[in-house]
Length: 431
Image 1: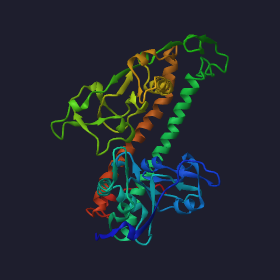
Image 2 (image 1 turned 30 degrees about the horizontal axis):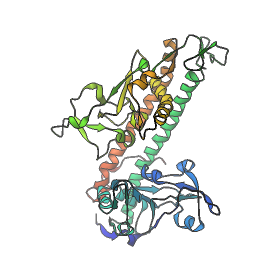
Image 3 (image 1 turned 45 degrees about the vertical axis):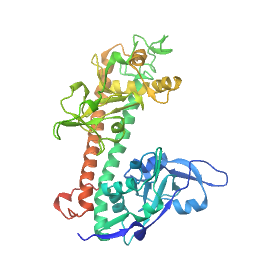
Image 4 (image 1 turned 60 degrees about the vertical axis):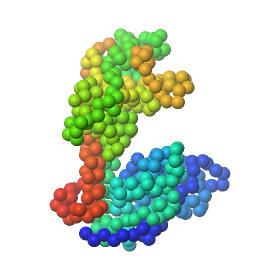
């Protein structure tokens, strides 16, 4: 495959955004595609528009920075040099959406450069290294100079090959986006059921009717300061689950490239396993080995709870691995913690700490309501377990698709494999 060398400025134009999050008198209302929308998504689609914040922009800003299908947006300014130059493909035309501050908008010449190909190219390690090396600034703020964006070298095949390569990555991303949308619906379904049964107390009574709505007896509970079903009791989170803190993984570095596991830190909880992750010996205790479907709860800095779906790993300190006690279902435990996160955040805020920090004492002092019978929990798990299993399966598939994408990226970008090779003929199209 013949590759021709161009500077970005020879095959595209670009604009640096100066649209901030403020609402200003005399300007027009717009949706704002912000730094995080660019940073966390391979593509920006019309399905995301409702989640964009509302701001204002001038006529000139709207003219220059409106999002159109085929463009690529990149992050331009950030706290670390490795968080700049992160691209996303604009997959649809938007009526009233502009790119926000700290980003740049690239518009390819469609006769020479395909936007999907450019997005893939800028995701390559070659482009990431270039942007990191050309970042200006130090300490708490880095930025991409205009010349660095303008002069990045692109090695381009014919426009026809670019479109074929771009389509491969677009199909993978569309499948990832579909799985994420399905999972949002699955999580909403499970959450609604939990809320209906254990917050509103309309779990099925012995006649299969909603307990509270059908006149089930409620009694006042002084500790919870609310009414709960008769016979139900109060407890704490450690009554239903064990919270095992991770280890200082830097003390257990692997001795070879085989007997090792990726280290799961708070960053991995957010981003999954990446090239930048650290490694730990594989013979760490089972109590701090993490598998798909495990519940993780970060108790320092970022107070979050999640179901892990990114493969086996070793748990770093500052994160709890949460496992069942007394036969309480995992799904019930997950939602109980998720429901209590707001209380933990309030505790951290009241202590006026700069970071959230939850101790074992806070866990012991937590107050939750517990059913008087395992029957309710068994029925809940029977309904929710298939939802959780599908949720995990979808997220595992997302991880595999991302891995496949990352493996294909350098091979296609440098011409080591052809888009016509049989192993690339995978049907991921959703048309």
